[in-house]
Length: 617
Image 1 (spheres, helix red, strand yellow):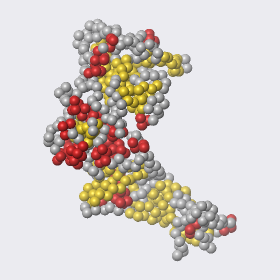
Image 2 (cartoon, helix red, strand yellow):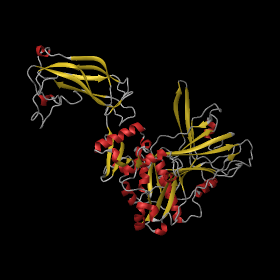
Image 3 (cartoon, rainbow, N blue to C red):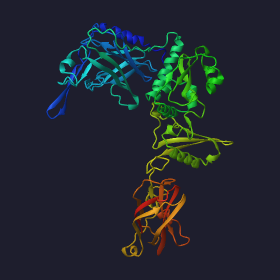
Image 4 (cartoon, rainbow, N blue to C red):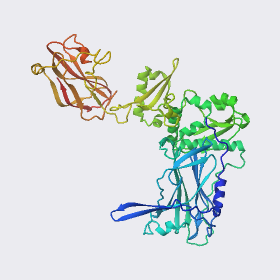
């Protein structure tokens, strides 16, 4: 297991580096490049990138700053610092991006384009912009944990001759950044691959973006203006351990919010992992939670309030916390989710403490019920309408042989694990040939909990598998009537070939052909619709097929979404038409009834199934 880092650098360092901007020495323009791209038959745009912008002491910058924005996903932290919020005309603007690895390893190798950070500029409320860009080369950088990589702003984009829409070539080639009068958004972003140059694993990509808004005034010596410098460091009243606890929870929540559940999984205590059951369950449950709260959360200050650390409050995890954590270094960190209704549901109380010097998180979890959502309230978390959700629960009850009316509670469960699947450990979940819909757990008095997982595969989906269920036509072909049963390797052990009919014999039968017919759905329950009769020669089926013109179940619902074609002999004692080779042949003609079979769950007065191209001979 990789180490969890100790306290990360505070954001005061970022501000200090921006304040020391005049001490930066301009890089050699080794990243300067141009590219030509066709815009129209007679027009070209030249993309220019100027690296290592000249940094010099700020003059006439006006309002004190700096302006700072940051983003973090549990593995990387990206900050953008602009020394001031308001500038005078022609004043140099010296943004600096700061990229820091904050993950669990001592260092990490990242793959990126020419520069790990890309910049853009947009006029707020106006058309002028610098679109940014980078040469698509394969570069690698090694980042030490907690050590920031500073990247001064660099120009990149397509020059224009129209000053109303952008910037000309002279502006791009000037290594000092200045902007016309107006309000401007300066953005920085990363799109990194873990593993260095050549890593194209999408599961390992990290994307973050930050932005500062500044104003360029026509006043050469502005004395007032916006100044935005949020407190990015923990409160100075916090102890060193409390600071660690706070930052660990922030990184944990950032990882969940940015869909890096694999990173958050590493921060959990062994008890938490064991209680969750599998990484796949954790990924699935947390993604659903983040979606339900729109990714919004507030991390409260760490607390060592005895009432919060009381075993009665901590619940199932209390015994493990007491057994492996130092009580003097144990904190409760509350995470509030404003979008969740109800005070209890809106707050999660995380326990944070070191285990053998490595900081870990104990989540609120009940054994067997992590990632569980009560039915029917939790249907939306699984993307299910009430109608479809009820069908999923009914299907689970049928598969499990449970009378759902006798269940004291019903839970919708997150995706189960899949053993040692390496994809699960990397955040990709289980590799399955079917798609997971939901697990359903029935708590039945005297019988204990019963869980059934619902998966869906290929084919026209039923309501269990889709909000827009369709109908699957199952004739003798799709039912496998002509499948060759073998008890051993072919040809040994296989059935003898079916006899072929001569022209005269084939003509002695009577086929049933229906080009199109509307079959009434009828009442709820099992339905059998007799479409007519055919006469087979020697009991041999040459063809038995049909289609459904409109496969949408509009105004009705079939229980399993299928309509099945069945042939039933009118001669007493004849075997069913399940397999041609097992059934064999019989001398003489054999009359059969042609029947459509389906089960109706919901119906309407004018509901019909449009059957076409039916042929039995």
